[in-house]
Length: 76
Image 1 (tube, rainbow, N blue to C red):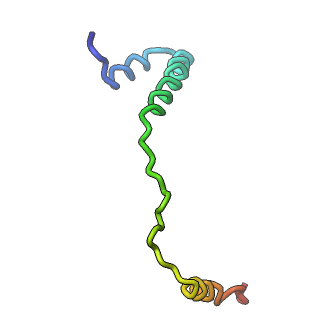
Image 2 (spheres, one colour):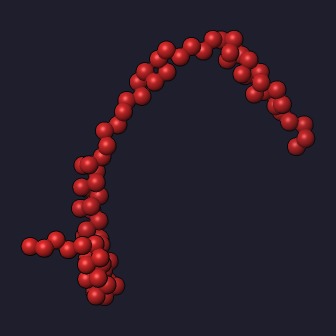
Image 3 (cartoon, rainbow, N blue to C red):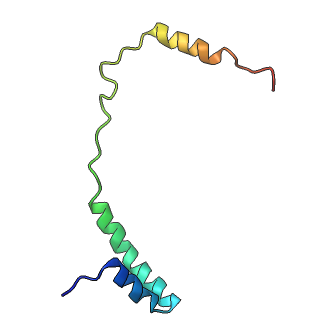
């Protein structure tokens, strides 16, 4: 059996009336979504992402002051 190419399938689909095209798509879509769901990539854990990062309380305080320097703005 010869496997049809996407172009072949599209050509055959275009030969159907619009209502039948929708029916074919609505039948095919759940199967495609199901197969894509099974092939999902393994997710990398974010646990320990910041391990070894050293942020001192002084750094946090300085950054907070810098962010809030122009708050609230008087020009609005």
